[in-house]
Image (cartoon, rainbow, N blue to C red; front, top):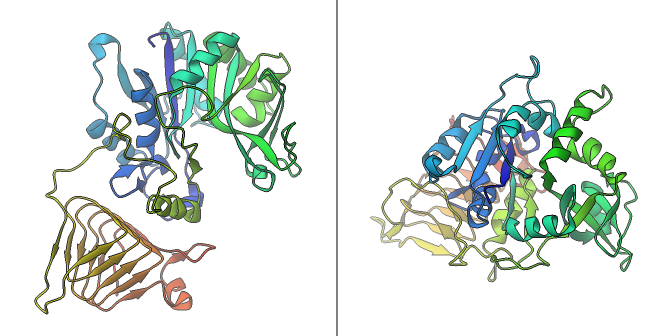
Length: 405
């Protein structure tokens, strides 16, 4: 696929995911016990044969840059392959990236330097598995100016997305961003076709569209709001149905925008279902990440004779459970759980130490937190709210490095 350039948009602030994004970019937020959110998009690229990848970063990007350096330096530049981080260059004036379209417009010089015929634009902050090669094949067959990946959702959920109208050939006839009354599918009045924020452009179409958008003072410089609707009028935009065409990845049709604490928490808990809606165990589609060299996880009998137990949980390397009980939880590397502690329905990030006799329920504990013995979190919303952020659905978030009094 040396005629294709891939651009991963990874510069958003992710403010709705605060406090997890107070000191890191959203794509760098840990997920699933051992991964970062961006690993899913980059893994899709790797397995889809995409070998020229630009990652556009901006907001609090240090940990994201470090993760890509440590975990994704896997391609050979001597063969024209690369995963390159591109922070704002301010080549088109003195502004930071002003929107998704502006982020690429400010880096048009990189498109001009490449000989790519097609440009794939992806978001670095969604959880899903997808073979982009199948989508690119359709894009070439239809000779499209733009192909938009889409999926069916119930009508009541469609107002959160860009909603598309299509004809029988897949030609997109309309695109409305987050409509109050979304148009439904021709064969189903209860479902809508929504954009997944995955685009394939012909390079010349993208260059022209971005240049025109940059000169429009009223534009938000956003693909959904500004770029796509104008291209639809030229009748060159096609829809690609997620999970419906051939591809090497299992068609689980799982896609999540983990943009809020509740959606992030629920996506982690999805991995604990008896049959997870997203299969992490497909042997020919492993999710790549950076892993520190920790020893295997283990349980230990405490001095009081309690045995550490894990029930229906994801447990990463380096975890030591000394007489505690962990149930329906996601435990990241190098966590310590001490005697008589209970962790249930929770997510613990790296280097968390749970003291003796603690009780944690429905909570997310960010990195480098030492929880004093006999602490309770997730049982008293009034008391928890005095110290921590609580999501609309009651998930308590302990921020990174929090110091208990």
